[in-house]
Each structure stands twice: as C-alpha cells, then as structure tokens.
Length: 93
Image 1 (cartoon, helix red, strand yellow):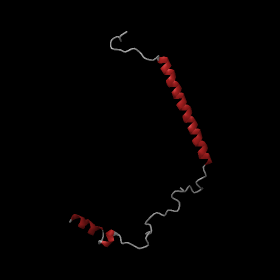
Image 2 (image 1 turned 45 degrees about the horizontal axis):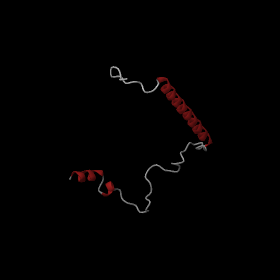
Image 3 (image 1 turned 90 degrees about the vertical axis):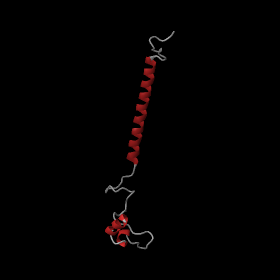
C-alpha cells in the first residue's frame, strides 16, 4: 500500500520503541548511580591530604626565582643589555 499524502508508514510500534528507550534511560541512570557510589567509596579510602591542606604535587615548591640548575649564574638579558629601555630601543631599530 503506498503512503498517503507523502507520509510513510510507521516502521515500528511506538509503544515498543518507547519501552526500549525508557529501559535504556533506566539502565544509564542505574550505571551512573553505581559509578557515583564507587567514586564516593574510593574518595573515603584515599589518604587525607594533611591538616594543612597542602597539595602533595606542589609540596616543597618555593615561589619566586629558582636557582640555576647548571650552577653558573647567567645575567638577565635586560640587565646585560642596559635595562628594559635599551632592549625596547634595540627592537625599534
């Protein structure tokens, strides 16, 4: 039988498709809840970061200029060239 007024026939029963989608939605919801619970348990088992709250990745890092790893002191480019004004004027030339 040809479609009427350019509207094709329905290929699937709407109620069956709706049930399938709802089941997928419920499965995703259950999986997400399980993942949340698992993360919660893992977080509870992790060691405390300390009373100070210091991040172990940056523990012991001192802000500011760092010592040269090679041991020899290199002059700052701006100071060696006569200051920032000299560098700026050199760039204009």
